Image (tube, rainbow, N blue to C red; front, top):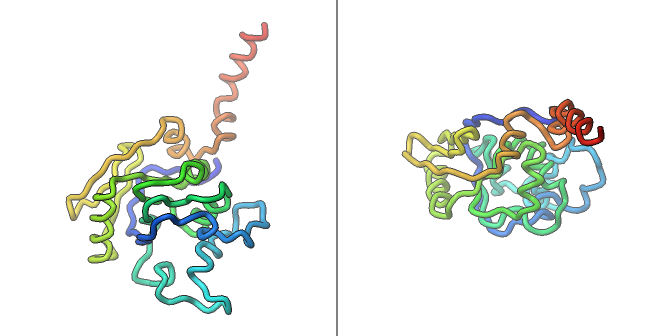
Length: 198
């Protein structure tokens, strides 16, 4: 198992209504030296969280104690730019298990799905409503239901469905990366190989 299985996530959301956030903003290139997935969360949005002298930028949302939770509510075209896997690693390592946006860069989206972060694409109007709800009450509970493929804010009667491939959905539900999936069907692969070869 590569990560904790994802089924239903209930959490408050962290609003980041900035469009065209690229992977270098998510995790600057100077922090890409490590090859393991650990520790990248410390430098998530590093240049937005800290000044050059390492003092905290107080008005950045991740430094604002008002907002917390395992869901990042991001602007349109999140994760554009280079294909670095470290961007997804830093999101996961920081503690986010889901990102909600109206559009994701494809490579970033797939990198997230491979490590247990669920990227949920919603309509721009839904995203706008979600921001308004979070700003009005930062403790509002958002439910992301992977089995039903729904995002719900029950107290505000807000709901949206989302798409995900059946393969990636199954992997997330089981905590599998691609290697875990292949190991899980090892017997089937061996049986197929025997029938094909002999």
